[in-house]
Image 1 (tube, rainbow, N blue to C red):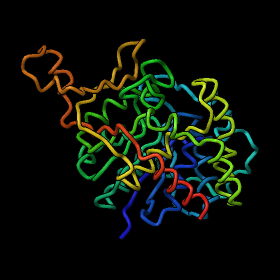
Image 2: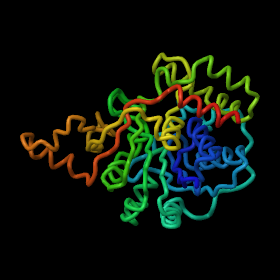
Image 3: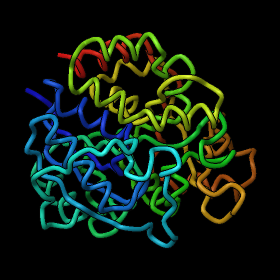
Image 4: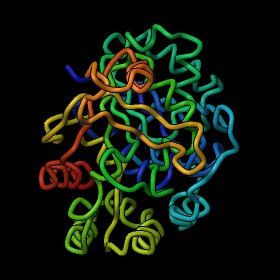
Length: 323
């Protein structure tokens, strides 16, 4: 029996590839896709999700949600993904429209209707936080939450301290991380360096003749240039497909550990920092009481993935894009 996914996304170029992976995978059934503002404004992110589902021949219901963070102005990543989020290649909009139900209501209803559902988050956590604020018991009804976000061991991709998804709405991230949900954090570090698609990988995808593989490469052409300007690394960096790979195939995470993780919300300099208590100092009575009380305010520890089986991840990605 296939597992059931609910995917929350701010659909831009790497999100679209992640959606293709899930919609094409025989291992999972996607019950719903909910959309949040992030990489691009909400209407564009919703159009991109509809386009991607149509490209896959899927009629999965798609719901538009929060158009801005809980308390802050929206910060976009169009500088990375292009104004339309898909590299500005003029893709024709999908024929169908999003459902009329708000994404927050859809999250609550979908979780209730699918016991053991797995949640995969690919963008800012605004929709999920709003659903948890309305129905805190959802945290216990979700069997697994694979969350693309954070920079647990390295620099961020929006500031030196923070990864984009967490930075955009750190208040929402704090609500989700403190909810008691069984979270697996897939940080930005996992998609870099050898995990980025290199020239050989890209040529292989294009040579396959698959329309999905061609879309995956071309929709990320703008992002590949932005990634090089940012990191001086060549290739297509795919954070959301990395997280989706681990969601579908948990064994792709080759080393992990569980720790308290706090989200910084009050500092301008370190806003969105995912502060990982990697040495478990919060469990050591010798350490500062105020520190222990702050970071141990979470009801559970977060499962942090440190390393990825890159070769296996690429094999799965190629199979799902070309089969």
